[in-house]
Length: 457
Image 1 (cartoon, rainbow, N blue to C red):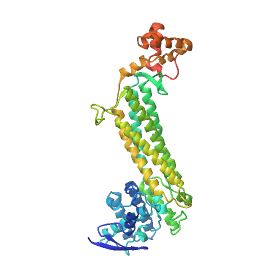
Image 2: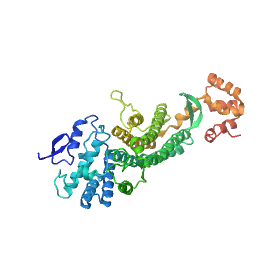
Image 3: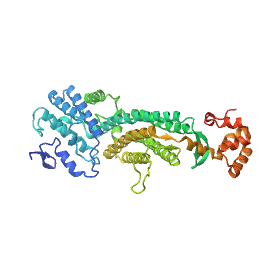
Image 4: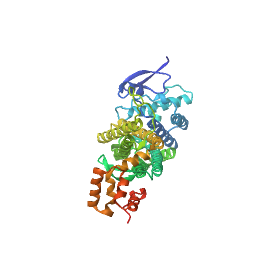
């Protein structure tokens, strides 16, 4: 195997010549063997975009040779197109606030740029990972900026998918608008409603999530790129600090702005906590709605689509596995939120050392929510209502008499309820028609009256 020798402050290492990464990445791969997961590809993609923006700004201002900058830009484009993905080998959970990921990018970009201009990998006298690719940058401004860009992009997927999920629930709300059933509180029968009204509540919960997720993008458009090590911009020209934001804004198509106080933007990552909390809120709704759908399925009021055999021993058993999977997904998103919170709180003075776990957790939550939206949308489209079962529960529930209180009073309603429980042998509606004006019974129990805002005189 052909190798090249690279050096750093600790000594030298032989690097397989086929590899685009270098000595800093090799050391990181050996040092961090914690999670067994590589850095999220969304973060790699956004960091390559940041690197290209920096190269463009440095070139326009005369700090970087145009030919070298063109090669660096082309190398970044390769990464943005999904090439060289196997060259990003650092573990997702690494020390150093993300320095290893930044160096992995710097080395891969430098060596790919060298290759593009027919020079050997490792010819750092011509294009250097730090002097050229990382020019006027620090991990501490590149990494948070890249994470914000990645988060904005990833937020758009669940926002769009939540819109489809909301619309799917609204369609089922219409489909089930005339199916009368019993509402339940404290896991006990309560007053009448329709299955459509029940599904309307699910739709409204996800409508709020859709809006919150859409608006969350506004929280993370302020970036600290140009702030370098601690936000003061040390080693970066003033002209570059202002121009690089414009270049990244153009490349990304996002409404990014420079932080007025980059020391704050570098030290404090609370905006990620805010965004993560919005994702957790959505996850909580997923857990609650999926638990409700599983319960309605268990009672037979709805039938979830059968998707696989449910038991290795009981023939014919089918379980609500999609809902159970989604509940677990919601729990995982909530766990990710806790990690984002803890990582943010653990930052020290002018840096947050735990950005890698923060980034891994936030981007994982976003991926999960997008997939959860797809799965639940499909599940809701395929479920069926059991009109007869809903009506059967309704017709055997004496609490329905509550709807007649405005017309007959509480005491009379209680008397009828007790009589029905003791002697009722027919369905509730038939029983009430024997005891009350049949026209009144018919009117009160109409679906549109049962779900109307207040009763109608």
